[in-house]
Length: 363
Image 1 (cartoon, helix red, strand yellow):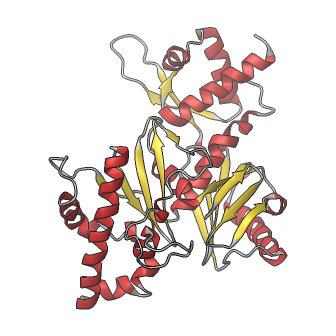
Image 2 (tube, helix red, strand yellow):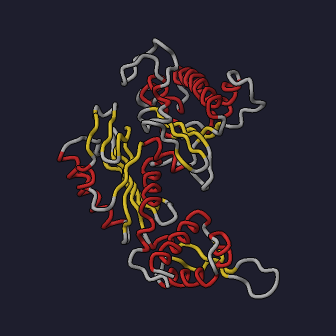
Image 3 (cartoon, helix red, strand yellow):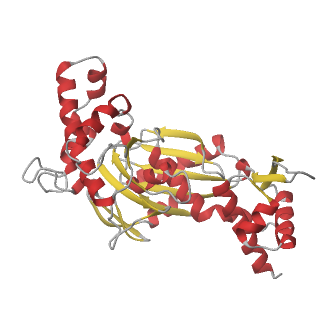
């Protein structure tokens, strides 16, 4: 086998165990259509390199039990960086994409040398104090649209075609960039074949569609921008300049500061406003159900507050959806803290995870 084909086999084994978590050598050979000698050779190399570890015996129908293998989670790390309106969040995730540490910085994004310098310094401290080497790469979540691999535009930041080189210079690792709603959507993905629509109710309203494990980008990389769907034509003005966008009604700022504290304290006006909010959210969600016909996951700052009122939200949605017997397709998010940073770290793992194989002898 050539060096190139050996590396390719090792990468395939690595990617398979990222999604399947635990498999025997025989399972790996069957799943990847590799010969047993090739499988054994590569597995041995990955075990010796400290990338794989044995994790116990598989069930046996007789004879010697096969040993299960898994990735050694802390053999490599990736970073997630969420550059947001009010703060910047850093996250460190292991080879399985599990966030193991995070840090919130009082560092609202600014396209200035001072902001990039502060991020560089904060990253250096975070890695030194929290992350064992090696760091394979970083993902950056940003509330905007990637115009190309090298530039981003953002209504909320007032940026148009901003070059990403200044970001790359302050991140001392290979970096990849993603829209914030897309990043949060990745954080919700649990299997390689997931299909769902993610509604982000965060600093702004956004969305992302996951179909068979892949994010839908659209012709101009703006698929899922539900915050700028007209919910009430001619209504409140949105930050984008239009009137009646969903964002003007459903972003947390539409509820006002301190809203959930008042709601949880039993404030009657807050409860009345919350009921109105749930009604408007139900309209948006049932429209999305008609369009995509798949599960809807609601996340972000508001999404984490939905659990006590999930039944009420589904009841309101039932008044707008006459095609479903049960409204069993609306769910609160699973990732309830720093979802954008967590998803950005997953993107970095997808893009850069196999770098851990560089320089490793696999047979």
